[in-house]
Image (cartoon, rainbow, N blue to C red; front, side, top):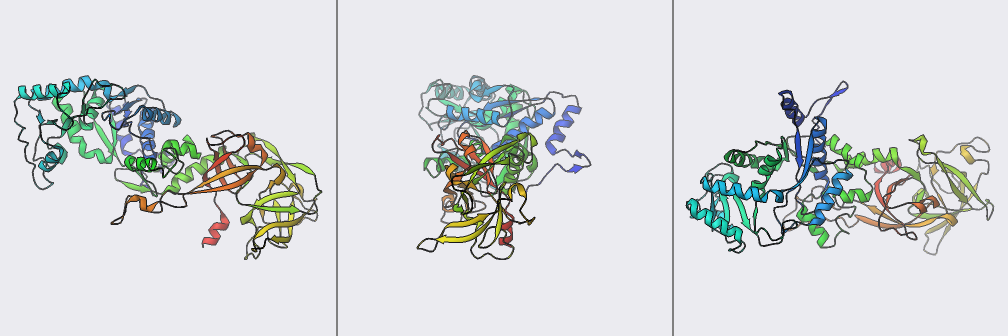
Length: 561
C-alpha cells in the first residue's frame, strides 16, 4: 500500500513535502503560484497522469494559484491532434480547467534563438556523429565520456551548420546540436546532451515549417520559464534531469522556474508504459484505448468510474518522495465508496435460473415498490413488475447446501427482495443432470417483509420477472494481467505472456424493465451483483453494460477461509 504523507492530527492534516515547499514560498511573500501539466500528445492519459493532474491543479487551487495545460509536442513522429483532444477531455472530466492552453511548439522560434545564443557563447555545437557513436562516447558511470571530434568547431561553423540544419539541407540523423557541458560529469545526462535533432515530418500544428525539433530537456525548462511557472512538478524519474534543467536556465539568464519531483504512481496488475499500451491497441488485444481493461482515463470513464472516485484515489495515495506500488484494490474501494452514494439500485440477473411459482395465479402481474438508493432518500422509489415466472441467480441455489448457506435449496425458504417468501418444492433437470428450473411455492401473506405466521428467514435474493425482463449483454472485466507486476518479466518472456485469458467474460443477463430507458454512461448498482455502467456499444434493442466493480460478498469470503 502507498506511503501516505498526509497524516491526520486532530481535525487537521499535516502537509506533504510539496505543500510545505509552496507554503514556505508563499510565506516569504512569493504569493503567485503557477503550476503546469505538460503531457506529450503521443497517447491517451492513464491513471498515473490522473494523479499528476490532481496534484498540479490541486496544489495551485489550494494556494490561490492557477495551472497551465501545455502540450510537449516536440516529436511530430508520434504526436497527433487525436491525443490533444483526448487529453483536454480527460482534464475537464476530472473536474479541472486550465489558466492557459500552451504548446511547446508555440515557443519553437524562441527556443531556436536561445540555441543560437548558446552556440555564440561556446556552449553548444553541431555534431556529425551517429546516435550509436554518441551513445558509446558518453562513457559509463565510472568511465568519463569521450569528447566528440566535432566538439571544438568554431562558433561561425556551428552557426552556419545549425542554420543549414534548419533550412533542411541535411537528412534525418545526419547531424545534431549538442550542449557543450562536461564529458566527465558524474551525471550522464550532463555529458553534452542533444538539444536538437533533424526530423523531416509534418508537425500537427506547425506543418512543414520546421525540420529540426528540440529535445525534451531543452524545451521543458525553457517553456516553464517563458510561462513563468513557479513550481514545475515532475515524477521522480526526472530528478536526474534537474541539473540540466537548471543549467539551461542559468546559461540563458531567463526566469528561474524550479523543478520538484514526486514518486510516480505504480499500480498492481497494471501496465503504465504508453509504448506497451499502444502495442495492445495496435495488436487488437484490447478493443481500443478506452477498453475498460486499460488503465487510461477514458477507459475508466467507459467502465463507470466517476471523477470523484479518481480524485479521492489520488488524495488517498498521497505524495511520496520514493517510488511505491499501490494495490489496485484501493482504486476499486474509492469507486465503490462513491458509487454506493450516487448509483441507483436495480435488479439484474447475470447467470439466470428460471423459477416457476406454482401457486401464484397464472397471468397475474403486480408491482412491488423498490428503493432506488438506501443511502439517499431523495432518490425515491420505483415500481417493478412481479409475476409467476422469475429469474434468479444460479449461484443463489444449491441442491446440497453446506451449513450456513442461507440461499435457496430444496425444502428451504428465502425472501425475494421487496417481494415474497418462496420455498423450493421441486428441482427440474435436463438429460445431462443440469438444473434448468425450480418449482416453488410462495406465501401470499409474506409481502412487504412480513409473513403469515411471523417466521423469518435469513436469505434474501434478487430476481427479475421473466415476461418483463430486458435481455442484455453484460461484460464482466477482470485485471488485464495475471502478474502483479507485468513489467517484471521472466527470461525469454514478454509482458504479453502474462495476459489474463479471463480479463473479459461476456454473459447474457436479464434486467428489470426500468433499465430499458438507460443511456450510455448511466451507472447503477445491480443489487447483490456489482456496479455497472451502460456501454457506448448499446443499441435500443441490445443494451450492453460493463461491470465497474463488484460488491463485497460475505459468502465468497466465507468460502475463501
